[in-house]
Length: 173
Image 1: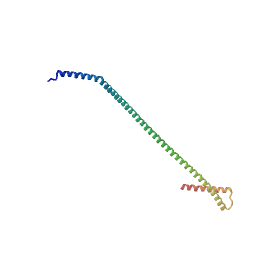
Image 2: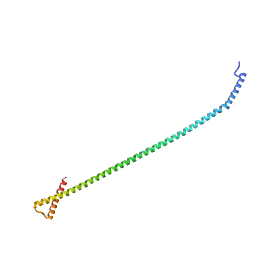
Image 3: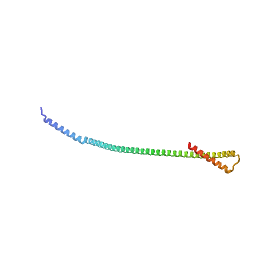
Image 4: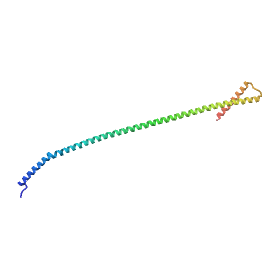
């Protein structure tokens, strides 16, 4: 019966400690360095991947900001182009209206001039006809041929009366 600290057990324990120490030494010498190297290598690759991810994220943010700025610039340019097109359209519309008014005024002026020419021509024809009628009437009344001066005086009187009548008719219109 032995106690826990029996000499037979003590020798076994001693050899177990020696074996354990040798095992630790072998593990530390042969197994631990490759595992440690793998862990360091893995840690470095993870750190590198994190750095690359941070760089990629920073680059993505920079690109995103650039794209946002380009979009804002494009929208600003589009607004400017639209505003310029609106201004040009408005100016063209005003020019067209002004030209149409001017053309309308020219047409009206030409029509007035034409009416005035036709009116003057009609008055001239009426005067000629009235003059002929006056001559014929005066010849019939007098039954003789009048002197040239008498004819002209009679014509002038008839024309004056005709002018007065025409002006009265125009005023009443």
